[in-house]
Image (cartoon, rainbow, N blue to C red; front, side):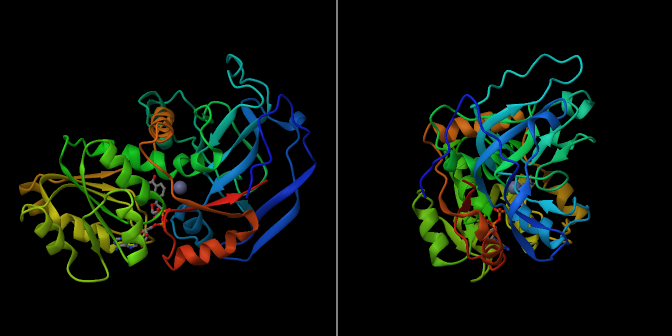
Length: 366
Ligand code: NAD
Ligand code: ZN
């Protein structure tokens, strides 16, 4: 599909648009053709209207629709939080704040973290996603599975000049999340990082960021297709978790001593238990994948004696997003994606549930 919407100095904003919605958790999706568009006069201080051009589909969107997590989302909901597009209209600035530096026509990204207060301790320390007032795209507010989305000037991410919008979309959640998670492991150059879930949306980017950051990668996922995809990034150590003993395989590949870190981006819980068994002393378990009802069962004695670090990592902050995009725009990380029409979302969810997707699906919202 060819991009037909480009940067403009002003946009004609329609009253209605295409959107994919659901009104009930795990209920049917509706392909809306006359979903209302928030009009410029109705934008509140700090809000921006974005003409969404492409949006990635993240497993988080699937978890939200299935009601997998102990949090309630808005209903009816327009999901989606990997949106790339153009600023179409900028609402008034927040009281006492400088006007936004964004301009109409700027290429921007919509992330999971749509807004935060920017004044609390979490925000001041750069942990904006943990702000008590955080708003999340495609969860607490409508997201990017539509053509015209309301987002927030403070958190929209400017996209690198000339970087294709369809390639940028998956970086806005999958990319920034794994880039941040790898930083959390605080590894030294050449150390061994294991990535369970390596063939999925987050995983295929995680292996590339880890390599670009100088680490040795062992990828875990299942099937010849995913192995082939990972080999295309130069990953030669692949373990199929459906075949054989994962812990033994990691130990064999590391001379019996285990890995320095595991960045678990798998959507299944079993990967966490395995990781604790193949980490070497002082190894870091970075928790990213969020399977429903997943518990991490860590033995206290071995956690202490091996001095394991167990760290939750939740997306990334505004600067992480800029860095993750810059690394991709410099050609060090490539998003592998297939473009489908926005209306294909229900079918994408079915394939995602079956764990048959390689890399990301990007939806065309034009
Ligand atoms: P995806 O469906 O594209 O990929 C998941 C991959 O995990 C698949 O390739 C699947 O084959 C693989 N997998 C499943 N069980 C496995 C196992 N036991 N061992 C190894 N691999 C296994 O999903 P995604 O969009 O990459 O998201 C992955 C997870 O990350 C989801 O739970 C999602 O909600 C979560 N996520 C977390 C954050 C965060 O901030 N922490 C951000 C985005 C997504
Ligand atoms: Zn996501």
